[in-house]
Length: 136
Image (cartoon, rainbow, N blue to C red):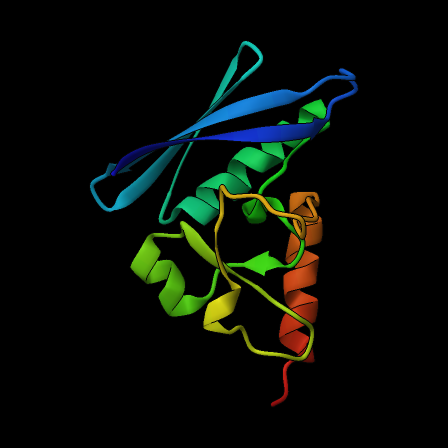
């Protein structure tokens, strides 16, 4: 795989629109994600692209930046077989107390009216709360 996505960045106190270019590349069984913004480059290599984006987001947060995409949205998480089949490019929008449906699948680099960017640790807290909300 060799794909590229452009994602808006919010925050950072620049007062203008910023964008990051994300390049995806399969490296054997690993997923390498390269993020270019301003004059900086961040590279993460993980088992899937969702996790690589999560790692890059933690570095973007140092500059006060959040990607405006589903992969950074508080209510979007990777889900078992979906992650395995898509290498983490597809994740699920979730609602408290409800398992995800096929209609809830989104590309992590896409955006939409319901994207709610959060810091990486907050997304993890939302994931934990969603898991706890599911019926036994």
